[in-house]
Image 1 (tube, rainbow, N blue to C red):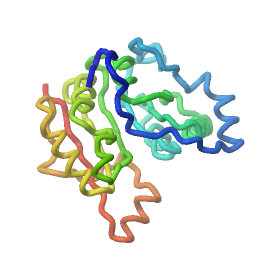
Image 2 (cartoon, one colour):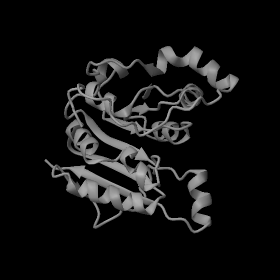
Image 3 (cartoon, one colour):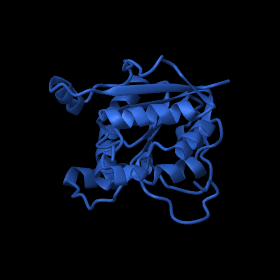
Image 4 (cartoon, rainbow, N blue to C red):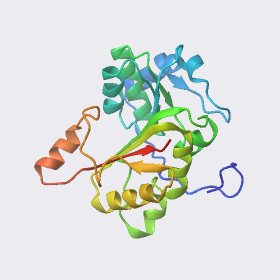
Length: 228
């Protein structure tokens, strides 16, 4: 991947769908975007200016409808969170939850995660990265669309502080195994477990995940840490 932003358009890990927004999601965007939504720009963010304080910052890629994102931010008020979501209904939903919970430690960027990491995140600025249940793109011909690729992991690792972590989770075993191989191949990272990790308490179990476990489906967590 070309990290200077030049060259051909990169393969996206998502397809922008024309999802229908509810009235509540639309209203949340109108009312709460000034407080919670950050505009994409090809310039590094100054986190103390964004949040009005100095605190650890965690990047969450793929907020979905925001339940997990908002719950983690609410449970960890001493940590600041930047969520990334490309779909407008999800952005509206997470802004609604952020407002309802009064979350001063959460901001959202509606843009491509690769471009955000490349242009908006300073080197060695993050305490952690969360990527929970990214699209597995299960068909072999679509594997090139998967978010977790060597070039992107290398980019994320460069934005981590020493001992900062990358936490991935998936319910697709073949993708989990690919993720594990990709993370192991990144020389600046080390695994915090012998293989897959036990789900840490800070990652809430979603309703979808609970239903899957009852049906016998597996879930795999991976937590790697940047070396000193």
